[in-house]
Length: 195
Image (cartoon, rainbow, N blue to C red; front, side):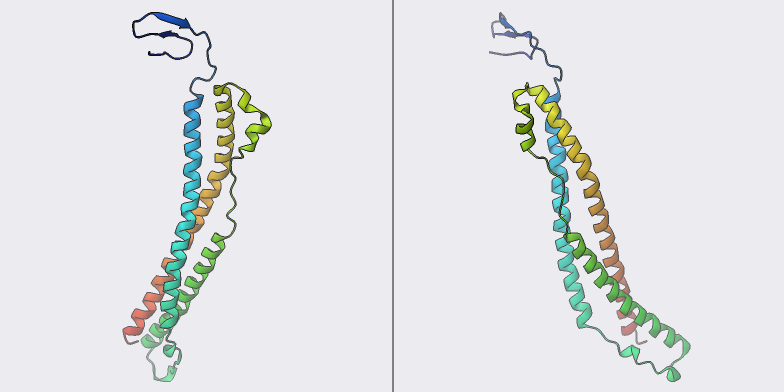
């Protein structure tokens, strides 16, 4: 037996009318839109969780980088004997020391910054208890769907800026990691270059 939507007659396979349904819905697409709102909310939650996964990976990488940096510290250029150095050698040694200390300092700063991003994993969530408190389950499905759409829309509007802010902070932390590594690499190149 094939059935038509609300407000239309149900029709059997032979084409005869079985019963007439006069019930109409004020919000016919509410159930479909509810699914979209739920998926948007779930996508935001997954993105938020992925940011923390990326922070963990960045911290592990940062730990390896810091281990290498701290294990290969060589402050021998700091023993400057200015009398015996040319101006170019003095400038190159100063740049090397600035890059060495700056690179390590920025890398340590970015590690601390990533650690601060790990705290405060607070985010607004949908409270399913509200359904029982407002007794929305007694309403017709389209009205309940509209109520849920409103709740999910409010939560998504609260969560989205939090996720965007956390992502922007993570992006800044990655940039500082890269700058620190580049500065340290410049120091190593200058050191191995014999200056």
